[in-house]
Image (cartoon, rainbow, N blue to C red; front, side, top):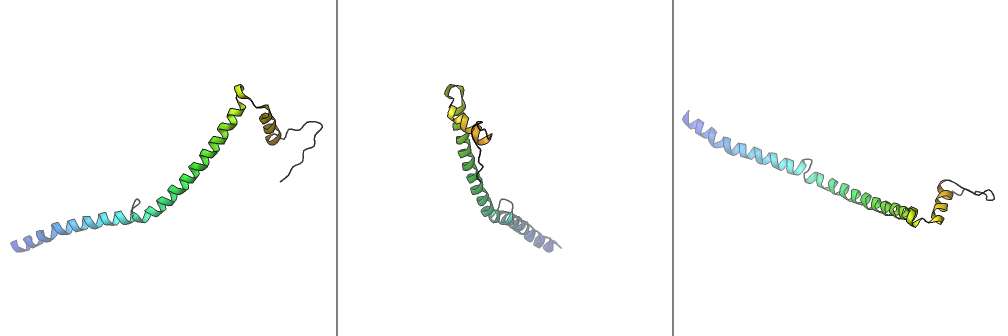
Length: 100
């Protein structure tokens, strides 16, 4: 009986350690943050960086537009351009032609 108990203890600790090692290896390879998901995460990162670059360009264009519309540096030609393009403003002696 005592020999069987020693044999069981001799296999129990290495077996538990082996199970823990397998558990961590599985999650390192197939988990949400594992190697299998890594390429997907990299694609997401590059897509988000492209979106960020696009938003930075839009922000710069809006900032430039704001500079032209401020009281201290009001650009009247720009105001007229906005009124004509976005609001379809025309003078009474003009004809509006829509081009698509």
